[in-house]
Image (tube, rainbow, N blue to C red; front, side):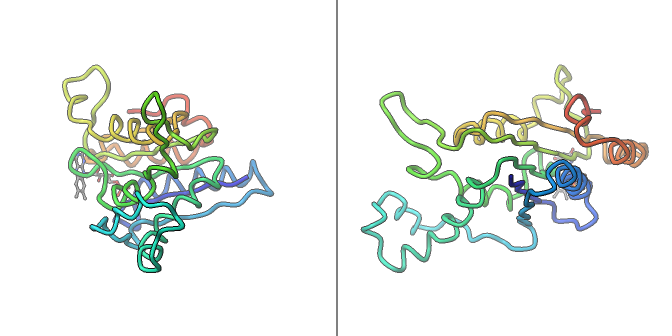
Length: 204
Ligand SMILES: Cc1cc2nc3c(=O)[nH]c(=O)nc-3n(C[C@H](O)[C@H](O)[C@H](O)COP(=O)(O)O)c2cc1C
């Protein structure tokens, strides 16, 4: 069994990093023979998509060595994702959406022919049978049913793009109101209970 732990916060002492680490720690306990693979998107910046991305439309056998080399980052990230049984993603809210480092990762793993197939019924996600847990942290609060829900461009986007590549079993854990004083106490409460219980109801 493999857990892929993806972090995208720019801060080392970040809320999402603490929670993804806590999740991984518990996953390790439950899967003593399992492997945790870490992908820190802030520590190692991914290259942005360039004009060379058009090489993704060519058959593998037709790629030049330069095109092959350009696509090697995407290949490696897709392989890493495909090998995971569970994926935990730490996603702070930046400007109502996700950090650009996480968007760069998405740009590399959403790839026609590798993670998305096109058939008679249109696009079909090719990554299946994985559990994804997304832990977000926000300065404010965007709870469903409130006026601010409309400003949450994080969960709807991530749900859509993960579903596009076949990842439909996705649970969101929102840790909100981080700009408020009481946020530290709530974070501590989360760290004190089992990560499994977060999956029930943690939005605050
Ligand atoms: C560049 C930047 C943009 C942010 N934009 C928002 C925002 O639009 N809405 C919000 O509620 N919080 C916003 N925040 C606050 C973060 O979401 C909050 O501090 C969160 O805890 C960061 O996650 P982390 O602790 O894992 O780094 C922003 C923070 C930064 C650094």
